Length: 61
Image (cartoon, rainbow, N blue to C red):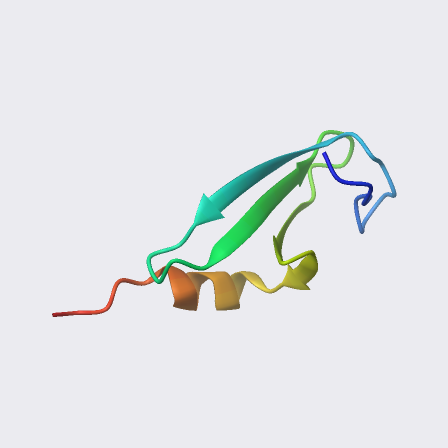
């Protein structure tokens, strides 16, 4: 686990799941155990869900 905290409640007790999206971008999904906030990071920086979803779409052949 990294040294970051939940941006909503400041808790350090949250899960991190590393994922590779369809375009091979690596992102981390985080979910706080205390307040149930969920957020995404890319290379340690916050990422909006709408941006994650754009990258997750598969290109049509």
